[in-house]
Amino acid sequence: MVGMRSSQRLFRRCLHLGHRRRFRFATKLIDYIRYARFCVVSLAYNSFTNSDVVIESLFEPVYWLVDHVTRWFGIVFVALVIVLTSSIVLIVYICVLPLIIQTYSTAWIYWHVSYGHWNLIMIVFHYYKATTTPPGHPSQMETDIPSVSICRKCIAHKPARTHHCSICSRCVLKMDHHCPWLNNCVGHYNHRYFFSFCLFMTMGCIYCSISSRVMFREAYSAIETYNETPPPTFTFRERLFHKCIIYLWVLCSSVALALGALTLWHAMLISRGETSIERHINKKERKRQQLIGKVFYNPYSYGRCGNWKVFFGVERKLHWLTRVALPSSHLPFGKGLTWNAPPWILNQQPCVLDI
Image: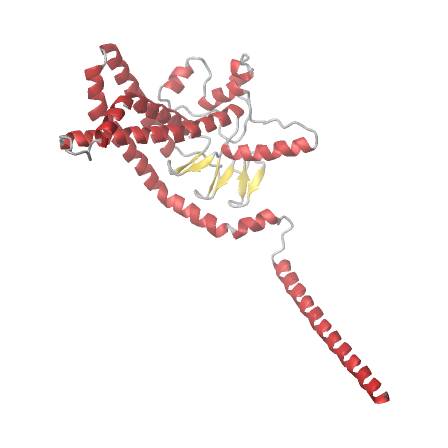
């Protein structure tokens, strides 16, 4: 009996000793893991690091791929715009315009010819200027630039409303976005050209869709009869005409819807005195101000009417004709470094849009 109790005590001691050894091993393993983590963190510690920085670092390879693909495909997108626009113009001259001349009265013919060519000139002019005009960059040589921060990519002064474009690898003054269809950034010096191109291209597509709607219905009805028995006696030229009209109407209608929505979006931003990037920044700032019981005011907004005047560079009423409705290469107000209100905005009368 005594021997049995002794053996039980010995067994319990061994079991307890084994448990303590296993516990020590787990404790040492946890200590080693913590020590290794401490070594890694101590080598790459940054007091400004947060979850956003970590996520951005993890997605950096994806950003790199998108940036480089967009950079190289920008030329392809520009060529695609030129080819598609040229094809529509060619179809209008060959198919639509002759039918307009045969159908409409002299007054309507003059109107179609005048409006069509004016719209085409405005599209070509603003697209050329939007693609070839640099958006504006902070000078790397000047040291007295009024800046609000330092760009962590360029390690240089960054003025207000300036942002770094990862595709162009440069800071852009009043950057709105990088447009692959222009193969260029949209910024301070070419923002007006970009919006005007979108506006006049939308107007041109709507004009082509409305002008060819009757021919589209006739061509669509004719194509539906191709598989009938006996087959219709359409010549090759007539079949090609039907397909060209279908192509013109579908392409122009699709572009009018998509580009029209984009144009309305940018018109709303211009009315508020914001860019696409500032839209997100101001949205967060507006929520932050609401939490502390304050109201956020956009420091770059001069009222709806004033914002449009500054955007188009309109100083007098005549400028709505010479600088907006006609091709104009005038520079925007200021150099994109400071954003004080222009004199003609400070002295302007109340506008209907501001009510």
